[in-house]
Image (tube, rainbow, N blue to C red):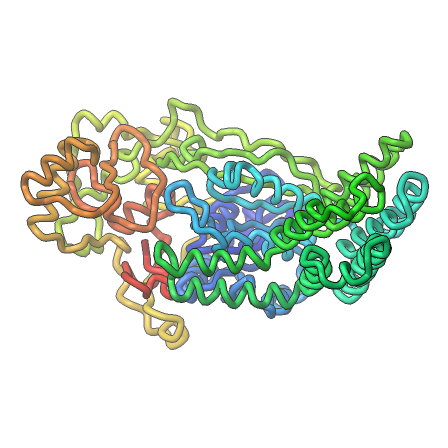
Length: 603
């Protein structure tokens, strides 16, 4: 396969890289998209798993003939950034995409407190800070908007707004120094300046500014405690808590190393829903910034000998709280001070200049509105560098009447039996009442009867890249990177990833009864129990051929085929995600138990 030179003629390449790339769904979408004078050039993808790398290399390097790089490494690894920059080799990136793992806060599963994946968006944004692309796109589950009563969403927005434009830092520091000179005490001025510099400086300078910040806090603490009896100030548990709490806050790297090690161990040992997890979580909470700060503040508030009406104590208290604030939250404090001397407008201009990215409210996108036969809701954050137009919406690409149904998407694959592997298209089952749903469309998904229009299933077979690539290498499957490097390709069938599990008569009967009821409700469970076919499995969904699929998940037996009353094949699930049939998923069809932590199966 090679890129069509006629397609490229007169078009400007927009470079992009895809983090948390998985099989490549976002990459596929970007490669399909183009305008009259622009197209997306795929520079690099990254994920932690080798099966993802293998799938990408086969698809984009072999089939498409692209020179796309792949980085197989945990984004939380201390060497990730260096290896990323090495692979980019100075290539400027216009767009960064990625969906940091959403498992720990998905609405479809139980949330896990202190799951290490909750912080992946910070690592994602660290790449943005380094590469400074024109745009970045971060997608996640809709549940992110309500996680921690919306605080997680707010934290993401604040972190995005805290990415700064280095060249405007000196003028910003000069401005706020003048502002603080007029509106704050010397102690508050010193703390705020140290805090801002801590957030905008490189590592060594940031550490020095953090030392300045705590030196100011400790000097203020000494000033306050001088008014207290010396022996009491040395022996009182509340005073000791404040003093030792400041020491703990200062030792952020050491605490982070402990937290990382414990979370890694907790994840590796699969500690959840057991007698260990609460103890581990309690200790992680104990050494977290917020807990330390709250403990310090509680000790300040409850120590009766402090003059709680004095500015010294009040300012000391507020500056301790400032330590854990984001840069954007620190800006909020500056806005309050600017309001007191009528310099809000000027501060606003300074903030516009120092913020590198603008972001509108998160966009909620329903995949069915874009020609995908699935009611999958995702929240999308689009960060726009300040020299680029702000993107505030992603309008639906098709109308309500044009939505693709499950039947239209997968009806032609309904010829496979139980425990079968099909490598060619066969004669499919026809449901007469659903046949009117099979309609022809143009490449963008709009209903059309003009020449060149096809049904969704036909588009899936011929592929949606005819405009850009000339097919010279047929799709193929290979077992491993080693086999790929040794040219040990498997036989090339016509149809890939279309295989069913061998299900017992008991399982087949159970699925048929659930399908008869149309849902796995109380009445259905009662009948299953009466027949001795009950199961501990929590959920089954019978697909509606005349509607869209629910959100596709990684477990095939969560879904029951609308007519065959069986679990779905990988190819059928891929169709519901709108992958072309030429997209071959490499690796194992399915894994179980603890293997799923290290190996990603085809589903």
